[in-house]
Length: 203
Ligand SMILES: Cc1cc2nc3c(=O)[nH]c(=O)nc-3n(C[C@H](O)[C@H](O)[C@H](O)COP(=O)(O)O)c2cc1C
Image (tube, rainbow, N blue to C red):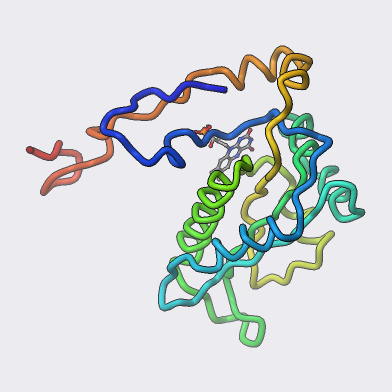
Protein backbone atom coordinates (compact mmCIF):
# COMPACT_ATOMS: atom_id res chain seq x y z
CA UNK A 1 0.00 0.00 0.00
CA UNK A 2 1.59 3.32 -1.04
CA UNK A 3 1.85 6.43 1.08
CA UNK A 4 0.28 9.69 -0.01
CA UNK A 5 2.61 12.66 -0.42
CA UNK A 6 0.82 15.40 1.45
CA UNK A 7 -1.95 14.91 3.97
CA UNK A 8 -2.62 18.52 4.82
CA UNK A 9 -5.02 20.23 4.28
CA UNK A 10 -7.10 17.25 5.20
CA UNK A 11 -9.35 15.68 2.57
CA UNK A 12 -11.97 12.97 2.83
CA UNK A 13 -10.44 9.54 3.63
CA UNK A 14 -12.19 8.01 0.60
CA UNK A 15 -10.15 10.37 -1.58
CA UNK A 16 -6.95 10.31 0.45
CA UNK A 17 -6.72 6.55 0.81
CA UNK A 18 -7.63 5.59 -2.76
CA UNK A 19 -4.85 4.36 -5.01
CA UNK A 20 -4.63 2.50 -8.27
CA UNK A 21 -3.59 -0.97 -7.22
CA UNK A 22 -2.14 -3.63 -9.50
CA UNK A 23 -2.50 -6.34 -6.86
CA UNK A 24 -6.05 -7.61 -7.22
CA UNK A 25 -7.24 -10.86 -5.66
CA UNK A 26 -7.70 -13.15 -8.69
CA UNK A 27 -10.01 -15.42 -6.67
CA UNK A 28 -12.65 -12.89 -5.66
CA UNK A 29 -15.55 -11.77 -7.79
CA UNK A 30 -17.54 -8.59 -8.05
CA UNK A 31 -21.20 -9.40 -7.45
CA UNK A 32 -24.05 -8.13 -9.61
CA UNK A 33 -25.32 -6.14 -6.60
CA UNK A 34 -21.92 -4.44 -6.27
CA UNK A 35 -21.85 -3.69 -9.99
CA UNK A 36 -25.34 -2.20 -9.79
CA UNK A 37 -24.24 0.18 -7.05
CA UNK A 38 -21.10 1.23 -8.90
CA UNK A 39 -22.97 1.94 -12.12
CA UNK A 40 -25.71 3.75 -10.23
CA UNK A 41 -23.04 6.07 -8.77
CA UNK A 42 -21.82 6.80 -12.31
CA UNK A 43 -25.39 7.38 -13.44
CA UNK A 44 -25.91 10.22 -10.98
CA UNK A 45 -22.91 12.24 -12.11
CA UNK A 46 -23.60 15.71 -13.49
CA UNK A 47 -23.19 16.28 -17.23
CA UNK A 48 -23.54 19.13 -19.70
CA UNK A 49 -27.26 19.71 -20.29
CA UNK A 50 -27.84 16.39 -18.47
CA UNK A 51 -26.74 14.71 -21.71
CA UNK A 52 -25.21 11.71 -19.87
CA UNK A 53 -22.95 10.97 -22.85
CA UNK A 54 -21.33 7.86 -21.37
CA UNK A 55 -21.62 4.11 -21.85
CA UNK A 56 -19.90 1.10 -20.31
CA UNK A 57 -19.19 -2.44 -21.47
CA UNK A 58 -19.17 -4.85 -18.52
CA UNK A 59 -16.65 -7.67 -18.87
CA UNK A 60 -16.51 -10.12 -15.97
CA UNK A 61 -13.40 -12.21 -15.41
CA UNK A 62 -14.03 -15.68 -16.85
CA UNK A 63 -16.55 -14.50 -19.47
CA UNK A 64 -15.82 -14.92 -23.16
CA UNK A 65 -16.00 -11.15 -23.67
CA UNK A 66 -13.41 -10.62 -20.92
CA UNK A 67 -11.10 -13.16 -22.53
CA UNK A 68 -11.46 -11.31 -25.81
CA UNK A 69 -10.69 -8.00 -24.14
CA UNK A 70 -7.51 -9.13 -22.38
CA UNK A 71 -5.91 -9.97 -25.75
CA UNK A 72 -5.99 -6.23 -26.56
CA UNK A 73 -4.03 -5.16 -23.45
CA UNK A 74 -0.66 -3.43 -23.69
CA UNK A 75 2.31 -5.39 -22.36
CA UNK A 76 2.49 -3.26 -19.20
CA UNK A 77 -1.16 -3.88 -18.37
CA UNK A 78 -1.47 -7.52 -19.38
CA UNK A 79 0.05 -8.82 -16.14
CA UNK A 80 -2.41 -7.27 -13.71
CA UNK A 81 -5.65 -6.23 -15.48
CA UNK A 82 -6.84 -9.85 -15.98
CA UNK A 83 -6.70 -10.46 -12.21
CA UNK A 84 -9.42 -7.88 -11.44
CA UNK A 85 -12.96 -9.26 -11.02
CA UNK A 86 -14.43 -6.94 -13.63
CA UNK A 87 -13.24 -4.66 -16.39
CA UNK A 88 -15.51 -1.89 -17.55
CA UNK A 89 -14.73 -0.30 -20.89
CA UNK A 90 -15.81 3.32 -20.80
CA UNK A 91 -17.07 5.15 -23.87
CA UNK A 92 -18.15 8.69 -24.55
CA UNK A 93 -20.41 9.93 -27.27
CA UNK A 94 -18.79 11.75 -30.18
CA UNK A 95 -21.57 11.83 -32.77
CA UNK A 96 -25.12 11.02 -33.69
CA UNK A 97 -26.14 7.66 -35.15
CA UNK A 98 -28.94 9.20 -37.23
CA UNK A 99 -26.94 12.15 -38.55
CA UNK A 100 -23.18 11.42 -38.65
CA UNK A 101 -22.46 15.08 -39.48
CA UNK A 102 -23.63 16.09 -36.00
CA UNK A 103 -20.97 16.22 -33.33
CA UNK A 104 -22.08 15.61 -29.80
CA UNK A 105 -21.41 17.75 -26.74
CA UNK A 106 -17.86 19.09 -26.58
CA UNK A 107 -17.98 18.17 -22.91
CA UNK A 108 -18.68 14.46 -23.35
CA UNK A 109 -15.16 13.33 -22.36
CA UNK A 110 -15.29 15.64 -19.33
CA UNK A 111 -18.67 14.20 -18.34
CA UNK A 112 -17.49 10.60 -18.71
CA UNK A 113 -14.47 11.33 -16.51
CA UNK A 114 -16.76 12.72 -13.89
CA UNK A 115 -19.03 9.68 -14.00
CA UNK A 116 -16.00 7.42 -13.56
CA UNK A 117 -14.79 9.55 -10.65
CA UNK A 118 -18.17 9.00 -8.98
CA UNK A 119 -17.86 5.27 -9.56
CA UNK A 120 -14.32 5.25 -8.18
CA UNK A 121 -15.28 6.94 -4.92
CA UNK A 122 -18.33 4.67 -4.59
CA UNK A 123 -16.03 1.64 -5.04
CA UNK A 124 -13.66 2.93 -2.37
CA UNK A 125 -16.60 3.31 0.04
CA UNK A 126 -17.47 -0.36 -0.61
CA UNK A 127 -13.92 -1.59 0.10
CA UNK A 128 -13.27 -2.26 -3.59
CA UNK A 129 -10.31 -1.08 -5.65
CA UNK A 130 -10.32 0.61 -9.05
CA UNK A 131 -7.50 1.08 -11.53
CA UNK A 132 -8.27 2.97 -14.72
CA UNK A 133 -6.07 2.35 -17.76
CA UNK A 134 -5.70 3.49 -21.34
CA UNK A 135 -3.09 0.93 -22.43
CA UNK A 136 -5.10 -1.35 -24.72
CA UNK A 137 -5.94 -1.44 -28.43
CA UNK A 138 -8.97 0.85 -28.61
CA UNK A 139 -9.67 0.13 -32.29
CA UNK A 140 -9.57 -3.63 -31.72
CA UNK A 141 -12.04 -3.24 -28.82
CA UNK A 142 -14.37 -1.07 -30.91
CA UNK A 143 -14.35 -3.72 -33.66
CA UNK A 144 -14.67 -6.72 -31.34
CA UNK A 145 -17.58 -5.28 -29.37
CA UNK A 146 -19.53 -3.63 -32.18
CA UNK A 147 -19.06 -0.05 -31.00
CA UNK A 148 -20.72 2.40 -33.42
CA UNK A 149 -18.67 5.26 -34.89
CA UNK A 150 -20.69 7.71 -32.77
CA UNK A 151 -19.01 6.41 -29.60
CA UNK A 152 -15.33 6.64 -28.64
CA UNK A 153 -13.77 3.80 -26.68
CA UNK A 154 -12.01 5.74 -23.92
CA UNK A 155 -10.58 3.78 -20.95
CA UNK A 156 -10.59 0.47 -19.19
CA UNK A 157 -11.60 0.39 -15.53
CA UNK A 158 -10.35 -2.61 -13.58
CA UNK A 159 -12.37 -3.25 -10.41
CA UNK A 160 -11.65 -5.84 -7.79
CA UNK A 161 -10.72 -6.79 -4.27
CA UNK A 162 -7.20 -6.19 -2.99
CA UNK A 163 -5.00 -9.27 -2.81
CA UNK A 164 -4.58 -11.13 0.47
CA UNK A 165 -1.31 -10.52 2.38
CA UNK A 166 -0.08 -13.92 1.06
CA UNK A 167 -0.90 -12.96 -2.55
CA UNK A 168 0.80 -9.61 -2.12
CA UNK A 169 3.90 -11.28 -0.63
CA UNK A 170 3.99 -13.77 -3.53
CA UNK A 171 3.51 -11.12 -6.25
CA UNK A 172 6.15 -10.34 -8.85
CA UNK A 173 8.79 -8.16 -7.09
CA UNK A 174 8.57 -5.52 -9.84
CA UNK A 175 4.83 -5.24 -9.37
CA UNK A 176 5.21 -5.05 -5.60
CA UNK A 177 7.81 -2.32 -5.89
CA UNK A 178 5.60 -0.22 -8.20
CA UNK A 179 2.76 -0.70 -5.77
CA UNK A 180 4.72 0.63 -2.82
CA UNK A 181 5.97 3.77 -4.55
CA UNK A 182 4.80 6.86 -2.69
CA UNK A 183 1.84 8.61 -4.35
CA UNK A 184 2.91 12.05 -5.46
CA UNK A 185 1.22 15.10 -6.91
CA UNK A 186 2.23 18.51 -8.20
CA UNK A 187 1.94 21.27 -5.61
CA UNK A 188 -1.36 23.17 -5.84
CA UNK A 189 0.54 26.37 -6.75
CA UNK A 190 1.51 24.77 -10.07
CA UNK A 191 -2.07 24.52 -11.29
CA UNK A 192 -4.08 27.06 -9.29
CA UNK A 193 -3.76 30.65 -10.43
CA UNK A 194 -5.14 34.04 -9.53
CA UNK A 195 -6.37 36.66 -11.98
CA UNK A 196 -3.83 35.74 -14.68
CA UNK A 197 -3.00 32.29 -15.98
CA UNK A 198 0.38 31.18 -14.66
CA UNK A 199 0.45 33.75 -11.85
CA UNK A 200 0.17 32.25 -8.37
CA UNK A 201 -2.98 33.15 -6.46
CA UNK A 202 -2.30 35.65 -3.65
CA UNK A 203 -3.91 34.70 -0.33
C1 LIG B 1 -7.06 8.05 -18.36
C2 LIG B 1 -6.10 7.22 -17.51
C3 LIG B 1 -5.27 6.30 -18.15
C4 LIG B 1 -4.41 5.50 -17.39
N1 LIG B 1 -3.67 4.51 -18.02
C5 LIG B 1 -2.97 3.63 -17.28
C6 LIG B 1 -2.37 2.49 -17.90
O1 LIG B 1 -2.50 2.24 -19.11
N2 LIG B 1 -1.66 1.64 -17.10
C7 LIG B 1 -1.54 1.85 -15.74
O2 LIG B 1 -0.89 1.04 -15.08
N3 LIG B 1 -2.13 2.89 -15.13
C8 LIG B 1 -2.85 3.78 -15.86
N4 LIG B 1 -3.51 4.82 -15.24
C9 LIG B 1 -3.39 5.01 -13.78
C10 LIG B 1 -2.52 6.21 -13.47
O3 LIG B 1 -1.19 5.93 -13.82
C11 LIG B 1 -2.67 6.56 -11.96
O4 LIG B 1 -3.98 6.96 -11.71
C12 LIG B 1 -1.71 7.67 -11.57
O5 LIG B 1 -0.38 7.24 -11.67
C13 LIG B 1 -1.95 8.14 -10.14
O6 LIG B 1 -1.86 7.06 -9.26
P1 LIG B 1 -3.00 6.79 -8.18
O7 LIG B 1 -4.28 6.59 -8.95
O8 LIG B 1 -2.56 5.56 -7.43
O9 LIG B 1 -3.08 7.99 -7.30
C14 LIG B 1 -4.37 5.64 -15.98
C15 LIG B 1 -5.22 6.56 -15.35
C16 LIG B 1 -6.10 7.32 -16.10
C17 LIG B 1 -7.04 8.27 -15.38
